[in-house]
Image (spheres, rainbow, N blue to C red):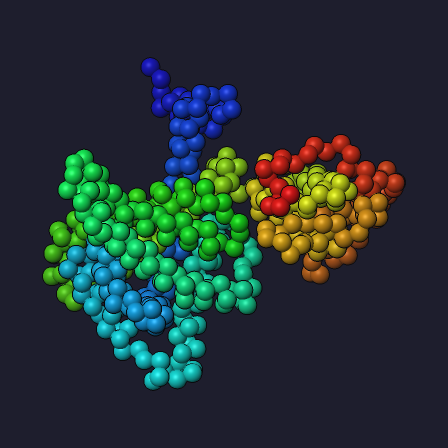
Length: 453
């Protein structure tokens, strides 16, 4: 009879050592889904997603009223500001009667905010509070997407304000169009005829899911400071949207049966329930972002939570491979390669590739373009970039003023050996340039090139 250890080994072999290219489609799909579930659960167990969700709850409590006040002002100009309360009630529906209480209180706060009474300083602070909420959300999504660089302040301000000003109009326009279509005489006539009536009824029940999934898809594409594929964003939004609606139904059942908490916490019970629902909503949104990330970057799934760091010889080879890829595109007058394209070609995580690219860029060997996504070009002709220069750059990457070769104690025997190694390498690579690396490298796959290639 197989032991628990044997079963664990078999499951490990099936999940992580199966060659999906040689499996039937159904088996490969099942293994991929299982891997995705495991890595997302691993991320939840790691605690970073839950920690960031809790942080966003605090930020939301501070920023919700200013955000709705700005949205209210925009919608008022289009004459649809009266729809804020029904939408807010729908979002807080899992809270039951407490949702009505919270919604009324929020609308009351929003009505009390008058731009004329706030003054220029108060209005600026109002906008800053809203922008800071979106900035906090962006940082959480960037963490999930392993993005270390955030939007510049000018771009952040313009992008965020465009969403704040245009987003509510688009959302309420979609809701209004949906309601208008459902109330037309044609639809009403079809509803009275079977089986069209049943189809329309089921379709109307799917509308909230479709709207939530569309909203989540937009968030996953726009918020992270990286290029997110529509397909990956849609996969994450689909799972997160269904999970959000299902969790809302379960949470509503919990609220109905939680009358004892009202006795214990009295008037604080509403606030506590509201904060729990905010936490669950943010957590679901971040889980969906994590799913979208793993769908777009399956190479991270195979890492299984390992914190990979390149050894010295791996850094050398990765740096030379990157220079060969960049040099090949430059030499053949092709569009420059992005970090993501090169990471996929090398089957490495994007953040590792970006770290090596950052080192080469800081030593003025390569330069970044202004394209989106960012791509890379050599700073000078390939014949003038020596292989020795590239290797010296990556080997000195982590040195600083406080710790480098000069700060170490002098030991003549060790220094002689070190100098001999350095001179031997210099002599061996004396005539070797990046141009010599270009000839034999395979073409980077067309699908992974920067858009426009």
